[in-house]
Length: 114
Length: 112
Image (tube, rainbow over all chains, first blue to last red):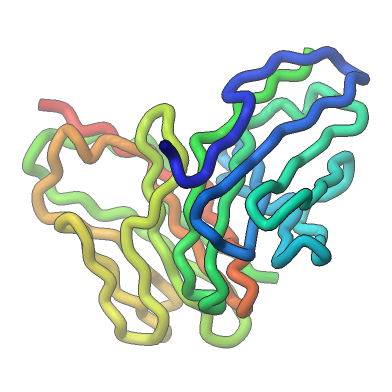
């Protein structure tokens, strides 16, 4: 089984709908992140969390919210999806070894908003 | 703010050719530098990293040296294989929270 699991892997939704992307990890890491990948832009940070009680906005948090239900679970929600949120979304984890820690990524969720 | 610039792709090479992907960065302080690789249909995985000036990261025949004077972290491999076909991302982390700033990614296609 993958260490970082994202569900669903693919999703098509309509404009205005609320959608949740889920992430769970078995690495035992405290730190979890949500990134968005767009062609030509690389990955950009949406939200990050260092424990259940700690949630922080990243570079592009507008239109998104997150929930850290447990150390191992970190969900990303789009409250009212819009077409420019069509992208590949990645969840990642890392341990608490500072900025040089390796990040472990899930396989991604491909979201299409029509 | 921090930023990473890497050469645009796609880069198309024949098997056994030499590969270089250029990466330069702008950051405050002394960031850690990374190369991540994304194989088709998969998430990113760490290829190599360097945490201070003049450090050389290496893995699977790939190498990159942290050059503070030129703010660069170019990726090289002496002889590529078809299995090296992937998208390569240069990234930096300039704080203790593990947040990554990525370049746009460079697609590499290796043909037999």
